[in-house]
Image (cartoon, rainbow, N blue to C red):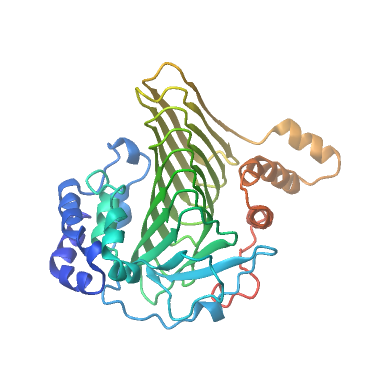
Length: 447
């Protein structure tokens, strides 16, 4: 049986059950997504955007699914005590792929701001959700997005009204928890009206020693003069497979800062599609990867300059140890009418061992003539001269390597706007390089 057939059979048999535990705007696009998935099948390595990750192999195991939406017996607010010093956040939880609504944080959000279950809001405001849901996450262009769209039953909805600034960071903890090997399909919809400002922090954790497969689709609409900072931090384990597709649409003079940090994982495949729809928009997309053992991290990005006077900056850095495999493929597309485009794309990689492997493919595709665009990539090892110099001054070889790795990766972390988060990540990255298990103090889940 090919990998996609089990999902075709699953949807054919259980589509009514899936729909009964969701809402109409989500259900309205399921059958179309199913048809798109059947037509495409999982992409092979011959597909340009998937050449570095075997998607069919990731989805071939027989995972369990909670399509009946059975309650998970956990109160994450009592069990999960991750505390980022000096970072006061509005803390929400998604358990597997369901928004945890039994208890909500005692935080007063600005008037009109919504942070809630996507299924709940879709049932209350079907016309509003239908206007945005599955509009930029095109199911006919990507089989994983199609699979997520046909199976996702809930997720997160974030809405910030016109000219409203959310000062407190909205932090979402994605908890994977199960007694059996489990597949989850999570959906996130973010709508930023004109002039709105918000910062989001997603933290992925797997709390049980099980095999997890998670698909995630994030759609973010950023209106005129709006500002969105989207931070995604993964700290799972070696048995976890994570496939995340992020779609962002920016209007005139908007600003997006997207940061993706992978510190603990098994296999991770991140896709980012960002499109400029209005002039004067700006984006900063940064990635930080620390991997060892047999870990695999693949980041694939597309920045689509459709209009003039927009600016994009990309910086992705990898530190790969032991037998880890990294991949980065970034494409910047500058269309005919996108004059005065400014774009910089950089990928820098450090292979600590001879058995670590890195694949890098930065690309520029330019059809306008009045632009400033540049791209580049490097793959190298630790500087022997620097190691020798540090050892001559009494620093051990192990500590010297750690200091060089830490200095290399810090450039990405320092680009994050939220200072307390930067400080926390400096601490986590140092612990990661030292090989310490990353367990937040006081957390009863990460045992």
